[in-house]
Image: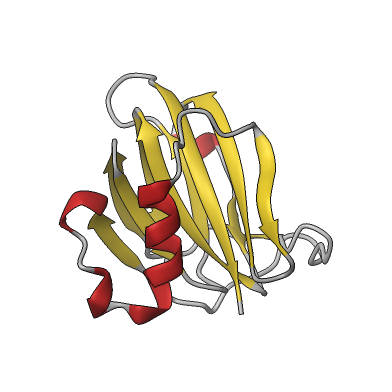
Length: 149
């Protein structure tokens, strides 16, 4: 997992993220269409989302088998819980089309608080849940870059 504010990020430190960071810095993320866009085969696509944050307990943990998730907050703030331990117990079968599987709540996880221009990179098989309220419900515009290998 990587947590960093975009303005203070030096992309030379993390060559794997260079393309994603360049995309974030050169794309007007306030106008991207909702849903999936900017698809580049299996390597990369973006999802643009808007929602109001809720108590994080309302959400299940999920994992991905084939893509990294880079969550970038365009506007608003949210809490994301991430467990770096990839030993998880599945709640349902893996959905190949969505690269998604819900898993049991890990015993130990980190709370990451993201504000405007922050992003977190969540690794494959790292259980995580998103859309959590920090102090009061907030409207969030977020893009999730799905980085394939």
